[in-house]
Length: 445
Image 1: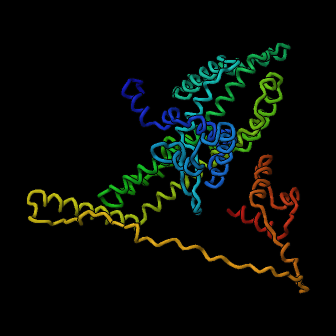
Image 2: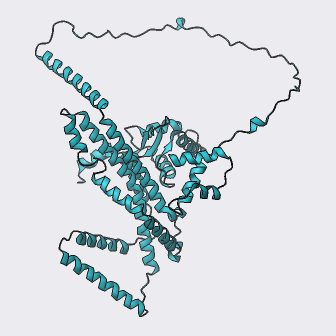
Image 3: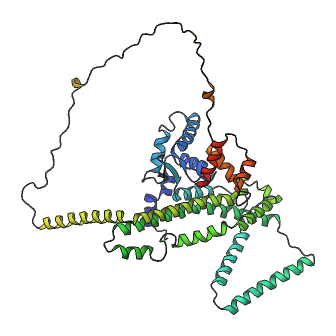
């Protein structure tokens, strides 16, 4: 993209990230959204939950800055941030729920990442990035080489290097990374891990944009349905077969491998135990960053599956006939309007009611009527002697579905799958059959 004046001026007026940085309450918006979504790696939040968190934030700020600091309510602020003229939050209704949920937009996450980059860094490493660039170039050069002799020669060269390194280790010459090199590589790992989590929202947004483009093509199609199906669904699904879909599917297959998960867990434990890395005081959540990738990837995977399913439903006969009927009505209106343009009829052929204001006189309003004041007699209440079984008042069983889901997720962090019997052995049932049925319901979903 060329950074000329016209392009930058257009971005300043229309891009949500730039609007966020120019907003009057930018510190409130950025700090709150970062604390609620980015720091705990939360993808979506319900409206009630988000309103409660924002009310607490506004209450603390008003105590610090004064009662007039932020006069609006939490709900009004959220609605304003989710409007099209702001575009900082995405407000939507999940399937099967009637309460709106909120999610960050990719533009907001870019603005927050840029704000984080403004802070000064005590250590800026360059060696690891240079090695990463060389490795990427080497992979592209070798992966695009079709000559078998060249590929074999490259593999022999790498084998000779490995054999030479093995001989040096046998001879006692072991090369270790110093503290600076370890810090450099760990900082590069942190940056890439955060960027990967940031990219997931943009991938989801690209999938939604692709789905909208396909829907627009369907709505404006004037040919036969068979031609449209052959164009969109002829070979493979339009969404899953895109560049975004193929890249994400490759990433998902790589990360879903049980051996890869175990390898990542082992490597993270070893690296986080190194003294130079301990000195950098990394976040404790970093130890399970690959599970955060899995959670974010699973959310994106559900989005892709849902969009693909909606696309198939959109192509059914009922939707197709409805769209054709709407297009025929619009074409009929256009043709009649064009016919009237050359020979408009005389007189008022399209009358409109005269605009008038409704007047309500003050004397027409009803007068104030004082409410009826009840009379309360001071009568002493006698204690009854009826025998009532109060055990049913305390026999209510409430099963915490969130707690049971957390037990399952915690168990799956250590292994690929777990049986219900093993799970109940680790977390004994406290509410009997109701809790067991809830486990089965979660597993069925």
